[in-house]
Length: 362
Image 1 (spheres, rainbow, N blue to C red):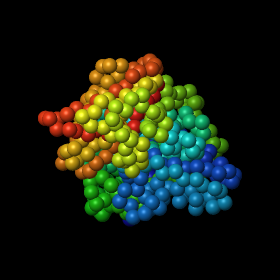
Image 2 (image 1 turned 90 degrees about the vertical axis):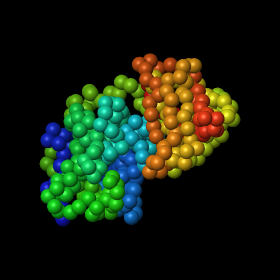
Image 3 (image 1 turned 120 degrees about the vertical axis):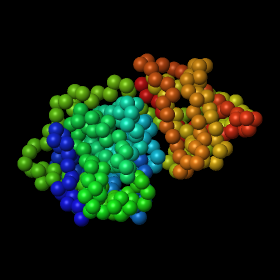
């Protein structure tokens, strides 16, 4: 069995003061809210119960360690989502609860490219600048072949001196050493089973144990760098759907509930007109439905009459239907725009397209 205490780690230049401050709050008996933000692994995919997911294990650590304190737990994991969508739903799904502690993992959902490094950094800055000033810990999961965005995400962690824990570093090294096989910890090439979640959760808990033991040795503090370098210049992201935003024109589009977490989208087809909005933003993205059955196709996204992006809802031979998030428009100036979504026919065939949410910032 892995020596979790030995293998758990934070980067050498991490600042643990924010985590220590949360523990001191819990020790004093004040209510504490802990949260997990990420994709399907955070949601608990392939764990046999929510309590056996790494996030559930982490939450249980707080409850057991501070039995006299009210511990509130938020799991904001949504399968097949990346840090770009995470940036825009952070306000709704996490920060609205004024969390004290947040663990973040989008490492197998983001790809190793500059766009995701930027979206991940904007997400982390948004969390750090929240009203509750939460402690943020970064968790890095991995695919079987080692593919993940850890190289990019760790650069962000190092910049803000955040605690970082790498499940990938640990399990891949143990597998290479012959301690076990990937199949022992995962039924596919990504998602951990109960044993995998136990390892990931154990690494987080081992880190928390170390800080708990040190809690009385040093007064909690925040670094000056955190206070001065985490002012989000791009504006906080937000997620808009039918629950909080009304189109100026539906033109035959209907409300749609296709996604297990995003229930208030819109569904249209190539035989009807555009779905249109009047919105104020500097940057705009779309979360839309990707389907394997061939009935969903392409849509043109117009900003102020100009086609800025063509998005494709078809996912042939894919692993399943899911909501994908893509950036459509980016600028340095926030102003009012007209947005239109027009579904395209395909070889005389009527095609569908679903907008799950609009992602705005600026």
